[in-house]
Length: 441
Image (cartoon, rainbow, N blue to C red; front, side):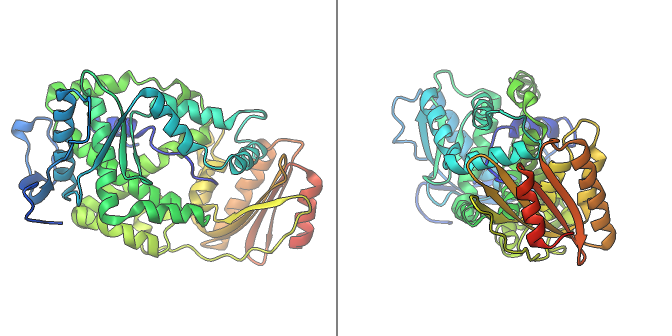
């Protein structure tokens, strides 16, 4: 599946974490100062915080290019830049670039970033409709634009290295300060680990399950820093943060299809759980930082993020997929569906969460996606950790095809040579053609 969805719900994850729920060089330059940071804390008062001291070299902010910004906003930005470095225990190698834009300019930049390839977007929309994840005739593009318009309070642009925020006259609220910390940590960690280039290469090369795992690390890192920042708030500030969080308009998010909601939340709450395990149980921020290179080189998978104990250990199997040519269709991509992809596919109806457990035995897969400008087709070849895992997913996919798949579309599930094959097509004749080429009787 295409991984287009970015930061819109991190604050909800931070809110849950604050309530105990589960759910970005050192130098002698005068612009650099050394401070002592809190590596971890569980109190809500700055005056009574228990800390684990860590010496952090912080780079003083350079906001000289910001014109027409009220003094209060400038002072808040300077303080947030300092705090992001202390909490994340890394200095900015160069001062972060803050770009202040109007609400209209922010919306335009979000739209431009979201709709990079209209033709590929149409292919994904058709795929999701075919699988019953979107209602027929739904405007997927507008749905996502509505979500971004509802939630985005600023973002880090990895292409330009900018943190883009809308103009403020009265300063940042406590909730908006949390968002700024999140985005500043993105800018900070990108300077140190160059995650944007790595992530973009995964997307460009259609390594989509790897990209899902890597995005979970990126967002989990920034969300954990935001949680630690929230724990430095006073009781009054924390109350304001929670109150404002409860007032966030989530109508578009709540009304979105379930697979969209779960796709949005995955890199934040699952990513937070993954980075928390690295931070708390393995080795603090140093272990989180090491994961940027390690997860990219394993290769990583959404399975390793969903189950952190599988990190470095349960590596994805390479699964061969037969070449299939369909007259009139373009092969949009060949990629890996992944454990998270199967969870999204199987877990759509309310009350069917147990079906997603069938994805737990994921060992590896490969898939082809085709599109002819109107109709879609997909072939997935799946390998489980054990034969029992293959049989379990087969039963779940058969149940999905019988219960949730559109009746006028084609779906086929079958085993061959120890692998599981799933074929789906808008046009039944196309599905039969794929089945014949693959050699499934």
